[in-house]
Image (cartoon, rainbow, N blue to C red; front, side, top):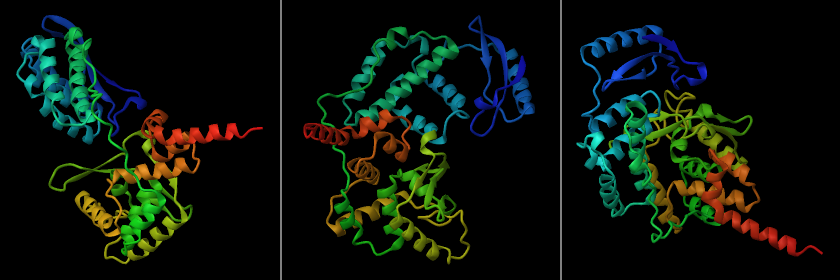
Length: 368
């Protein structure tokens, strides 16, 4: 065996680069084995010694491995490679793969997949949710192929995403500028007024909003920086702080003057609180704003103002609508919202850009 170090660009997000590598026998065949990453060389050496002891006493045998055992191995493998929010999604989505649990991997056949797909298709869920289950299933099978040489060719060729052509698309909700003005007209608390202005004018995701702290606000340059995300860890109010959704979600945004003025007024009020410091959350205090109170308060103001109820995420759609309807290019909108790819922006807001395309045709028709 050998302990090696990965290049810096291949280190985990918390800086782990050391691993051990060797060739081992699996079901009588020799194949390469690469451990997970460790922070120091000594940690990798210790893990290597522990592995050798286990390996020498019992040859690795995957012949009788069940789907559930494969998932557990896959989950451990992913622990230092993906965000905690992704790990949580694995734990949630695996519940909908329960019929595979006790099946031996070598015995999984196309009929098992067809029966599973039929059951999931009948669930009254959005295609996006069903495809979360589908993606996890395929990812686990891919892991089995890569690390244990299982062959799922007969299933892969028949697997496809869920797409119900008879289900009407969910209509995108958003506020126009007039509707938003009506919405905020009933809010007399500067914190809540500023919160919904940040959502509407800056297009932040809910977790980005909850993760915003005062040291992310640059009053001199009139900017705010999106550098972290608050995600709900459980149903009892626990939360975790992670990096934003994608690399491009980490961004610095110019803030409209009206919003910056309200942020400054809120700052002057909040800094009078005992123990205040720049690390406090803008719309919470030492702790981020609770997800439940955010949703409840939004609904209260919707009802008081007489405007339709929209989701917190729909304020982000409202921001995109304002940008597009005022001539912003698709590249600007994508960058402002922190989308990883322009395709994501175009697919989400194509109907809004279509209106701009119609304006172009009208302009062309006016040419002499």
